[in-house]
Length: 419
Image 1 (cartoon, rainbow, N blue to C red):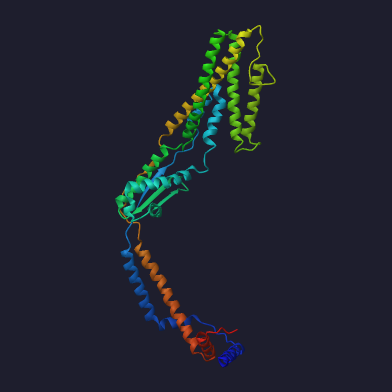
Image 2: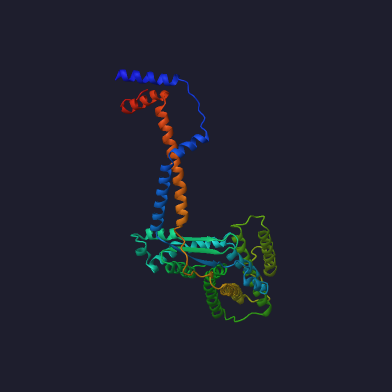
């Protein structure tokens, strides 16, 4: 063993000491080598092409059905046209626009694509068309992955339309699946507030429920005060002051809510936020002037005892709260009706531009491309193999490489690594 190691080290030193000759390979040399083995190259390429033809015909044929959708446009709402005509609800009008518009996405079409391919829609598709058996899937997640692999949904960069395509072995089933996506998506969207008008409607529906409770409590309190004090009405001047203050308080409340909501996404230098603050200051100044109170601008109205008797003060407070709750309820009711008009004007959440129809041409496999690609690749594989084999054969036959060959054989048989 020691003798073999010494001999191997000697061979390595001789190889390292021997000069290396540089040989330039001409294109003609390569051409000559390829012509020598042209029979092998032709047989290999033809065999690969024949195999590609057989495989391409064994692959299952699939058809692609496509549906084109028009997402709802985010235009200015019909309610914004009415807000200018409803002078007393201007503050809540800005709030209504904020409730819908501030929640919008940069590209709403991306949201519709995500909803179209959501898990809820996919599960409904699998159950509706029996895709678990069709795809031979044992688990629902496997059926969902297979459906996702055959489905493509995207937004056109130029036209902004949503393109959804589904592949299947049966052309009619492919069309049914594509149209089924739209139907299941509409069922899902019916339970969601997606559009701007729908979000505003949902927002004001929630607010108006609380306003109803507050108004009922104010009416009950007013009835109790009338029964306990015996005061049934006040003079017209005091009534006018109270009603004016109630309207101003409602507008101040709406403007404060609007400003708090704007601060969640706007900086202090935002022009709309600055304008809203100025409008709030003007409303508070008017309320202070009407209420004649510098310490609490919205708490009440100071009326002299000469204009209202002491027994009627409790009635005034109850009447003031009642008018305030009535004004808030009226503002919210008007905004809710405007949101419903906008939602009715928008109609369905998406509109179908092109319904999916059974395709009359297969989408895959592309047999010609498969055969051409395999033929091209096999040619270069054969050329590479011929050239590599020629170089290896020449390397083993060269006298100066014989010590290297012997060293390789020695190292291959030896179990002990040389250092």
